[in-house]
Image (cartoon, rainbow, N blue to C red; front, side, top):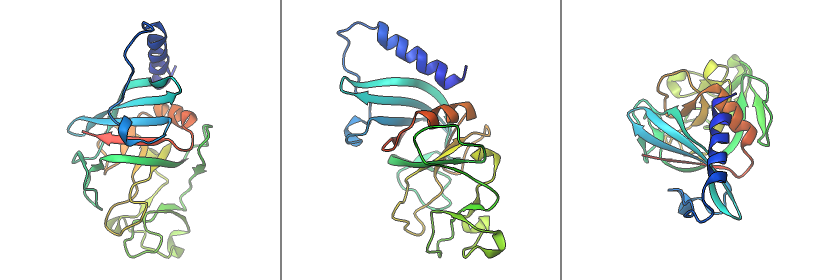
Length: 217
């Protein structure tokens, strides 16, 4: 059974067996997420490591659906000051806009795009489609496809499954783009959050529109 699903079940059983008078669970991000009912918490644990906790809210309050999932973050850790080339994972609370991956849709309520070699994340700061997914043949793309300009081809193993984090949705040039929750290759990221692929599959199946991701040290 997949790691997330296992930890999810353990968390649910633990909560079910707890005394009815237990104190209300108030996650660290509770005052920052408005009326959201699903939040993925990412808290740095030192260097390029973090732990992911998965929370869901009902009329009865917050519950931890899964906890302590190991994750990798940016090669230079986390920062509230995100920008292109920083190699830092942005702190803050962000939307989870849609899912994509090189693998078929595992199911779930989020929009899912199965990517091909013609799918790109435009990182060209001079492009009007900066910080968006684009589909074009490399020779015909109306933006720079060079990695040195920040553009990523999305047909790579680390994007077997991924969810787009809504960082710099205003698409301000230089403020960074291509921040995802995605499949880990075991190493630090360029600013994304990476977890085991089986965990990504379970998360995509669990997420609903309106879910948020909260990141902090």
